[in-house]
Each structure stands twice: as C-alpha cells, then as structure tokens.
Length: 270
Image (cartoon, rainbow, N blue to C red; front, side, top):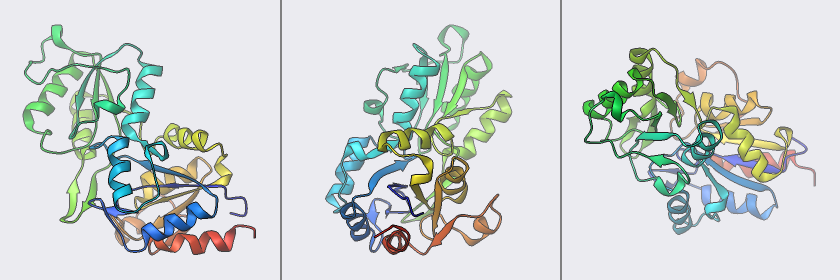
C-alpha cells in the first residue's frame, strides 16, 4: 500500500446506483484526483458507450472523461480484433454499444433463423435486458450448435438498481453453455486481461494499484489474483452472505467509496 500510484474503480454500485451518485462519492473522487493518483473507471456496464457514461457522470459532478473509462465492450472489441480478426459477430445485448465496438463486423440476424448459411463466427453476449427473450436466446443457441464461438463480456448474475437486485446476463450465459456444451471466453471482469489493460493505460504495475468494487468475486478477488490490492465496499450489490461464502478475503473492506481517501491517506507516504 505504501507505493499506491493508481486506483481502479467500478462504477455501478460503487460510485452510483442507477446512475445517481452514492453519498460522498463525488467528493471522494475529487479528493483522489487532487492527490495526483491515476484513476481508471473499470466497468462491466454494457448498456452505454464510454462517451455516454462520461457525460452522465460529469453531469453528476464526477471529475471524469471518456478516456478515464474502460468498459467491457471496449475490451471485447480489442479482444475480438486480436483473437478473432475479421469474425462476423452476432451481438446479444441490451443497449446500443456499437460506438465502442470499433472494427467489429456485427450481423443483423434478429429476423433470421439458425440455418447454417446464416451462422456467424462468434456469438457475443453483453448485458441482460428486454432483448434476452426466448427467441433471441434460442437463436444464439442455434448459432452455437452450428459452430459459432461464444464470447461473453462478463458473468455477472445480477446488479443493483433503485428497484433492487436485477437479473443479469450471467444467469442466461450458464444456460447457453450447458445447452450448447461449450464454455464462453470472458473478456470483462474477472478476466485477468481486463485488469492488465487498465494497468497498462495507467502506466503502473499491479503492486502500485488498488481495485475498488462491490462484487467480491469479479471485482476484488479477481484483481487480487493479478497482484492488485482489493478493496470491497459495502454498497451496491454487496451482501453479507456473498462475502461469507466468497472464495477468498478482500485486502480491505470499507462501508463506502467515500471512505477510500482516508484509507489512501493512511497508506500513502507523505
């Protein structure tokens, strides 16, 4: 902790809930910025582009711009370009994220069946919403049966909104994997490459960074496995029973992101 140079921060459930700031989070991020630490907002949010997220957070008072934000869709685009160059992709996602899927060939197969002559090379699963109906899931299942690869932006089972916990795409992903007898390639958190990309953008090593999240497995323990210090906050999707049943223990647990400056002050020289 004495060599902290940068902070990786989840957004949903940490800074905001339903895009409304949690108490004290705007002020805390301003204090962290003022201290000179690097900041990256790392999120599995798949319903908005980086520019849209930055605009919403900026209107709420957070000192961020699009360059500070690393999303699962942006990382997925880079992953596809590297691992599956030129692949034709069928996207199952709630929200318009095409702007962040630069260089990716997206097929509009919403009205097609699953015959072999229309099979994409890759089925990409983003975040859940109304689009995750039977027809769409069955179409994706058909593509997988005919040889398409399965790539998912995350495995989140649920997230917290102002209406409580809501089901996310990880629950549907499990069904697709079992039914098609395949395993998805994960591009967002908790994939190590996601955290490594964030560190590279900030120009720091794992031992020089903190990861702050409300998901003990995907945010905190996953970051710790890459050598990053993990900080779990008791907001957002945090649940005591999930904490107790987790596969490991966070390096630090805070009531809120608002408490992070105090932790950093106690740990940073000077």
